[in-house]
Image (cartoon, each protein chain N blue to C red):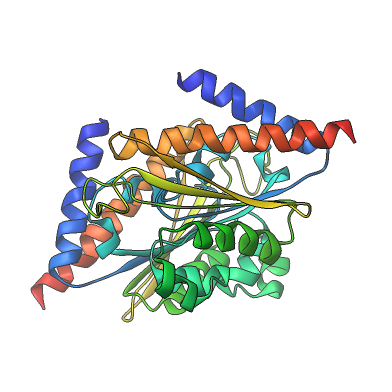
Length: 165
Length: 165
């Protein structure tokens, strides 16, 4: 499993390197796990520009320019905040792809409307910005791994499209 | 090993929570691993305010206010940059303890003067800022784990002193 993960990350890094594309992440609920896994590969510095682990709302606002009112209106775990995290980190770091993640890793913090396991993943490139919503029923670490797999898929789709250009 | 790590992090988080102290990290060579491990514990949000994975020099300068000239004069992997990372992230995030990490995880990137495995860990509180230097002969992931253990020790020492006050 671990080796498979590393192989997959290695392929993504190779493709981004070949296509001269760079990535940045703004992670809330995954707490740095995405950055950690990417940087397990030597050579990732060619592709990975920066990451922000914006656990507090203050950090989301100050470090990724998330709109304070948007957080107050929608909550930190919301489609709109994920969008702003992805878009914000891309623009701030001047990279090609920004990914923003906000959710509830649990086991506490869930509500009927926003249950434990809920996560919004915001993807932003110069061409498009969108948000995918998932609910993962898993413990804290497995939750992070499931989000990582979704991030892999987003990055792979993006780079496959770029290769065709 | 994993369970021991989680227990130790759990104890640190409990002590910081009880003493109302908060932490922030600026990680370069550890790539988000420290933040990831801290946030594996539910309740870490009471203690962990934010983290920055400042892989590029641009990110170190833009996100943690590291002085550009200091990087040019000393290199990104240096005592002075570790100090500024620790101090910078503490002040920017308004927390009690800031920890900054810069080093060479390898396997490439080493020089005779700055070998693979070299790491500087900058610790900053309102009372003191200092830097510890280590050289770890290990692969990329073990390197991250060895740095994490040093971070644990620094946090434990700090909070034990705070408890005595």
